[in-house]
Image (cartoon, rainbow, N blue to C red; front, side, top):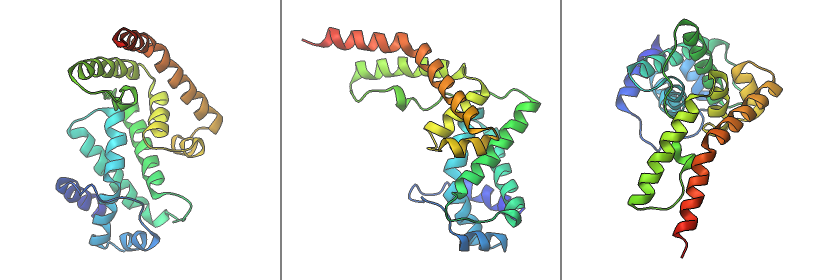
Length: 211
């Protein structure tokens, strides 16, 4: 329970954006011993990653904080069995816990789908017209992303927003690597198809604007 309590405190404090990277083996050992400073550092390092994945999978709201606390609680319970390796990111281990948690909740009830980050579909132009067009594309992207299956959405998020390799994603989701690649391919293909009219409209607008 110690890590869960620390998680609640640390998440209320909202850690500074400068906290980055992965914890080392010494920190993990200190967390196992219940060192509150180490536990707080652990939560602050990984809070953003855990929150980002959960909120993109199940929507925003108080339930996301509850799920994040449960992720850290499960992590604390699993720490005695966790074997630190310098070539394996601790964040990958935490994401695996988060994936399993979401899967558990999906079995119980349908959770809302949150809009994904729309920077992927925004161009670099600025100004009122750009912002109007960007909002339109963002809305289209949200609608398209909502049509992905839960399985496709998880793989897409892990690949594009969390930078995980196919091997890591396969381990995180508990599927063969070939299946992970197929799901990512289908997610990308579906998004391309659904967003094609908006890309064509953007191209036409740029042509019209060219003197």
